[in-house]
Length: 372
Image 1 (cartoon, rainbow, N blue to C red):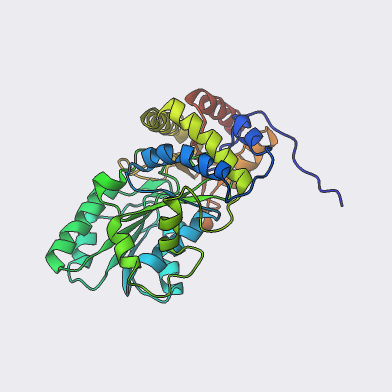
Image 2 (cartoon, rainbow, N blue to C red):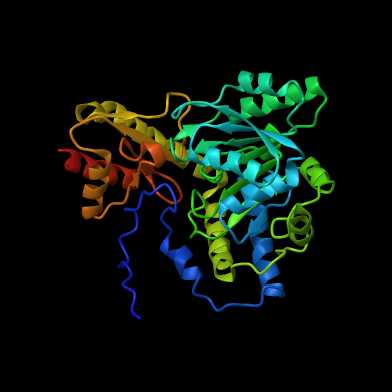
């Protein structure tokens, strides 16, 4: 059976907010022959990636490499770190998924829900935690569906205050799917207990890998919990990471891509990579605020709470959001449609991974042609 596959497109025209565009050099790395995953070659590959992964995650702890989507490590975070009850911060589709995973894993869940397009208030987080009924918090740092960036350092500080007042250890579990590798997410400096992301976002790798790091107190709690499961048991990841191995068979070809991309990230520098993402974000925001009103376009996320990797644009003009995306596709450009309940009223630009401001400018020029 012959399956028709899309022809390779010119790099720099694919601005979906995940999976994001993959550089040709990274794709080419995946064509190397498969090797045994328990041999010295695989250990050497993972050992080479390790310092860059720790630098990206801003941690001295191991960064686990899982052959799964980021959702797998979200479930792993719940199974390994939530003892009985979690406070789940919900402001979009993916933070709602984190909340649902708490319930699906048999833990109690309390929800702090805010309207789409809003960030969470750290003081409200503190208020909801100070009674000591919750032993964990789930939060999405950069909500991909809305383009909202939560004030994670302030939320982390609020969790620590509530912890001190209540006498209850409260672990902070963070989905950094569209923040890690697109900005500096300070695992240790901010006191995050579990931070995860997926390969197909700001890492600019093909889908299929997830990365996560756990604090020592998360590991200590996991040791006391039954029902951690097997595939995402942090005890196993911790033990195998010490040997530059993975607990189960890894996606070998994707590890080749990871090694290539870690070399590229190391050459650019993690700080420079973060700065490039903020420049792209600033350019997108500037364009929407300056040029957007004539076509009924506006920024969905409020000032001070906007993600550096994905900009969600609200549409209230003559051309519908879905039509804008379709017209851009016809011209060889890929944007993200609105997600979930925002499908018909927004579209999204994923300016992350290996994109540049110059490429973004070409996209915005094409958007102006479409909008007329």
